[in-house]
Length: 149
Image (cartoon, rainbow, N blue to C red; front, side, top):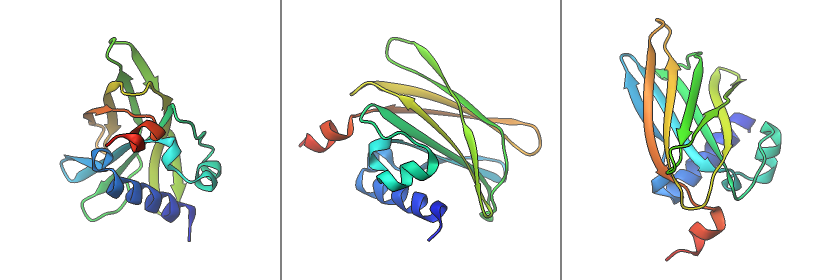
C-alpha cells in the first residue's frame, strides 16, 4: 500500500471515529477544495515519520487538496493562518506533497487544549482566482478528548 493510501486511510478512519473532525470541502466553480484539521497524535507513528510530522498532544495537522469534479488532482498554491480566542494570528506553512497523481498540502501547528481556532485558507485556482476557506474548530488534546463522556 502506498504512503498516500495509508495516510488517506488513516485520516478517513480518524474522521469516521470523530465526526467533529470530518473532512470538509468547499466548491469553487468546477473545483473542490477538501480540507481537514486533526491532532497529530491520531496519526500512526510510522506514517507521521514517513511525512516528517511530529506527533504531539499539542500539535495538529492541516491537509488540503484541490481536485476537479471528476476527481483529478490540481496543483495549487495554498496559504493560510489561524486565530485563537485571544485574536492572536499565526501563519501556517504548507508543504506540497506529490505521490503518483495525488497532490496535497500539509501544515502542522501548535494548539492549546480546548481552544477554539478560526482558520482561513487561500487556495489558488488554475485560472488565477483565489478561493477562500473559512473554518472554525475546537481543538482537544488527544488524551483529554478520549477521556470525555
